[in-house]
Length: 517
Image 1 (tube, helix red, strand yellow):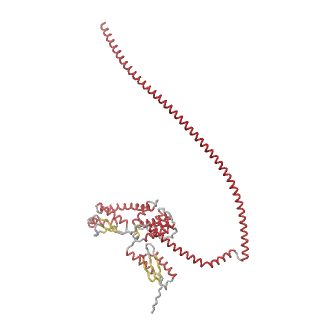
Image 2 (cartoon, rainbow, N blue to C red):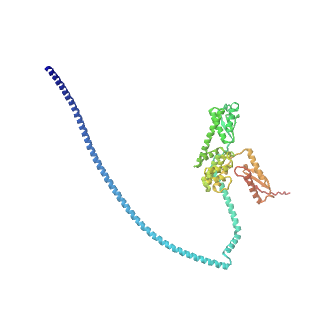
Image 3 (cartoon, rainbow, N blue to C red):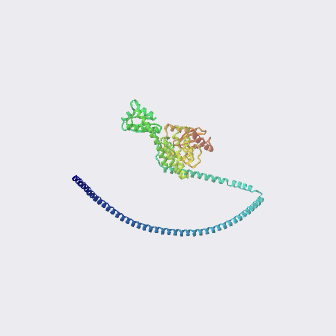
């Protein structure tokens, strides 16, 4: 029993010793770690203390610099304030001097005003005295001459009129002739200079368009089986397609430029694509019509850019572009309008008219021709309505309305536009007409002249721009010769349609023939 107790006691003592030894070993390890961590923290603390000391030094230096800068700024501000104070004092001194000067001038002006009022009073009294003296003098003269003032003036006027009427009439006639001669000469010079300065290409439009073919074998494809393709093409485009023996080409004929251009583009597209059949033809023609509609806007905008015009409505620009596909006696209307605008600007600058008004008037003068086959009325009436609809200036509208003298010309710009229209249309090669229409127009011109009493012969010359009329000297005297020329011109204006201007030349010539034997 005692042995057991001793054994247990021994075991307990050994266990306790083991645990004590182990605890001491672990405590020693923990102490080492704590000491190392404490040393590390002390090092960090020293580092922080040194950094803090450095930061404090930097802060003190920065604070010193800031104080120095603040002192400098305060010193500069004080100097500026002193300068401004000095300037203000100087300004105040100047203002005081000016006020003194103004007060002095005010006194002088007041004195001058009083002096002038006195002089005006004296002058009015003198005027009244002179008026009374003149009235007394006139009354005395009337008593002596036994005529009133009105009767004396009338008698003097009659005497001067009787004495100098013939002299001044001849002088006025001479001055009138010289003025007319100078005006005609100056007008010719202005027109010739304008035409020379604007030397553009002049060519009339044709009624046919030639499409080149890469091979003659394509003609059979264009015609199609039993002519189906060419029939479908003519029906869709509204033109005539002429396929003859001309190598490498076909001809598209038509008077409508839009249709002819659509047909040309469609034919080129079909030949490039290679599929020529009725369904494809209709598809391509519709596509080309839309493309030509876009091109109208481009043509109109290009014309506006060339002339320096801005601010027009897009619909009006498209209508202007449609003029590219309209002709007048073979002359392209858009090219004619642009050419006319350049000529009108040159003339306006020479005669002192407004160049911008004449340029717009020239461009829009024939705008009604773009719609004259769709809207009832003359191209002038349609053009005026279009201009009013798109808010064009009244001065420009008057130029459009008066360029064919449908209304009287009331401005210099209207005269310039009409003159430029005549110059552009009358240039050689600008316009053409068929032989039948040309002969018919000349015949009608001669017949109108022959319809008057006393006319023996009448000849249309200078391509119908002049009619030369020979009259019977026994029937037509000098006075009637002038009246006859005017009547023939008026009848031509009313009954005939013609481009440009026609000169009526009435010739009265008497020849006496005797034979000496």
